[in-house]
Length: 141
Image (cartoon, rainbow, N blue to C red; front, side):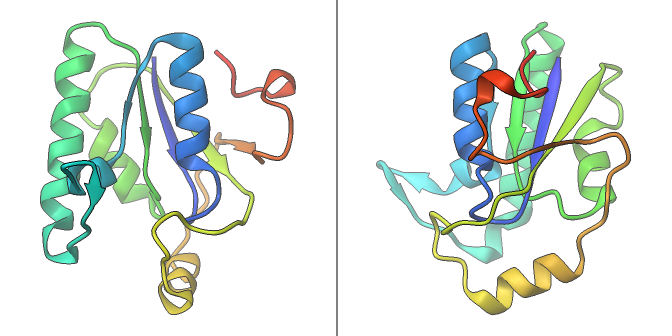
């Protein structure tokens, strides 16, 4: 199973992805992982396309070998989801993290506003608020 977790920064994507991966043994991926060097996060917007290509390639490789994969990225638009799922020929589901909180990466308010303004609804996604118990949520496998 491929699970895509989407939401604005601070919505609980990474937290949910880690929890689901721990429960299911799925591989957890995020484009942000590309920017971790020697244990430190060093984001560089000039390399965001490379980060997503890296993440997509890992997803495809793991999927080919039958692994369950959880990808947590903002996925603000349908085309971003399509970039990860087209050609996979595998079922996937989309979870939308709806909570608002502090971003781990201190995303500026103006950037958050731009992301929110371009948000597209994805039909069929399941909503999740990290403040609700995971055990009572439809996001569990």
